[in-house]
Length: 86
Image (tube, rainbow, N blue to C red; front, side):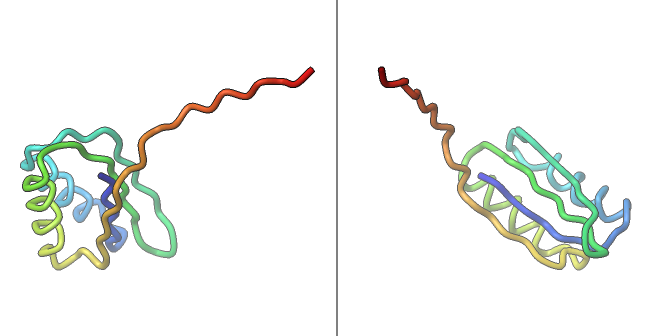
């Protein structure tokens, strides 16, 4: 599951987001923070029970500093083999 959050550019707000993520019973596979368009965009890939991911999203959504939140299902990796013709 991929969760994206957009917040104002403040490290205090980043700390609040990380604090909530730490309390959730999920495993964070990846977390990236990018400054763009005068806001911070945080994207994280998390794994865990659906109710815990739902709890995390609900808690993040209640933060007054969260301007936008979204979630997408992470697509599984697919390997492709190419065979050269003769």
